[in-house]
Amino acid sequence: MSNRPPAILVLEDGRTFRGDAYGALGETYGEAVFTTGMTGYQETLTDPSYHRQVVVMTAPHIGNTGVNDEDPESRQIWVAGYVVRDPSRVASNWRSQRTLDEELTAQGIVGISGVDTRAVTRHLRERGAMRCGVFSGELAEQDPKTLVEKVAASPAMAGADLVGDVTTEQGYVVEPIGEHKFTVAAYDLGIKSMTPHRMAERGARVHVLSASATLEDVLALEPDGFFLSNGPGDPETTEESMVPIVRAVLDRRIPVFGICFGNQILGRALGFGTYKLKYGHRGINQPVQDRATGKVEVTAHNHGFAVDAPLDKVSDTEYGRVEVSHVCLNDDVVEGLKALDVPAFSVQYHPEAAAGPHDAAYLFDRFADLMATAKNDEKGEG
Image (cartoon, rainbow, N blue to C red; front, side, top):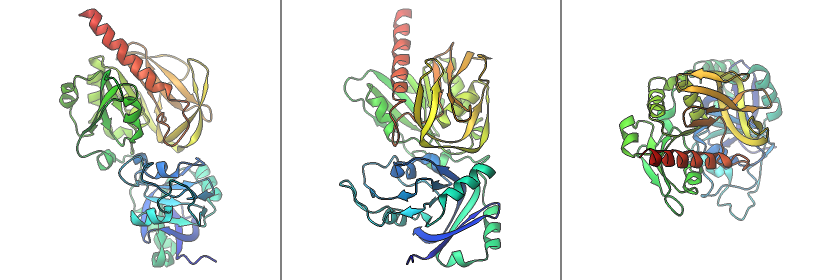
C-alpha cells in the first residue's frame, strides 16, 4: 500500500481515475494530453509548448534517472499537471541531482501516480483531448460531481493565447560557435534552449526576441534569417500580432524557418487555415515522410493544432507556389510547408532533438543553406 496522500484525475466528460499524489499537493487544471516518448521526461516537462496541459505519460516507469540542472529546455517546468503510472522509487544516474518527485514538489506541479495510464490514453484517443483536473490530498475527497463542475468551468485550449505567458521578458543573444556566418532574428514563442544552440553550431548569431518585439526591432538587426519557434496555444490568436510581421518579412524575401507553432503561423501568413486535432501528436517517435526524398524520419512532436493545406497539389498563394513538404504517416497530417517562390519553409515537429532523435537535424543545415544563398544573391545584385 502507498503511504502517499490520495489523488484523483477528473476528465471533463465525467471519467475519473484515482491514484496517489505525486509532486505538490493541491489542485490543477489544463488540457489532458498524452505523450508517447519512452525517455526524455525532463525535456518534456520544461517544454513551454506544454503550458496549461496536463501530460499523461504512456511509458509506465517514470523518474528512474532523476533530474539534473543540464537538461531543462527552459527556465521552469511548464506542464500544468503530471500523470504517471509507476514512479521510480529510486533515482539512479550519474548525472542525477535530485528525484523527479522532489523537482515537481519544489516547482509546485500537482501530479498523480498509480493511474492506469493506458486506460487514460485509450479514452483520450477515443474521445479526444479534453479539459481535466488533478486534485490531491484533502481536495481529492470532494464529491466527483463537484470536481467535474470545476473542470468544466476551467478555460479551454481552443482560442487560448498563451505565448505572452512563456516568452522571454528581455531579448538575449546566443553567440555563434566558431566563425560568425549569419545573423538570425528568432521569435521566442516558447522556444527551447537547444534550438538557438543548433543554429549557433552552424555559425549563426541568434538574437532571441520577446514575442512583443516589433517588425522594426527585427529589421534593425539586419537579419540574414528569421526564425519562428515552437509554443503553446491556438495559432489563430496570432492573426493580428505575429502573422502581419511574418508577411512583412516574406515581402522582404528574408529567409524564414518555422517549427511547430511557427509552422502554423507561417501557414496562416501564407493564407492557409489551422485547426485543432482530435488528440494531437506528442512524443519522440512519430513517423514523418519527407516528400521530396521519400525518406521516413522518426521525429519529436508536441502539437494539438495543424495547418489545413492540400496534400495532393501545389497551392497558389499571395507569395507564389507552396507545397506540403512533410506528412505524418500515422494520419496524413501536414507536417511541413515549403514555399517555392520565396525563401521560406517550416515543419510541424521539433528538429532540435531535445529530447528526441536526430533524424531532422538536416533542417538547420537547410536553413543555413537558404541564408547563404540569399546572401550570395544579394552580393550578386550589388
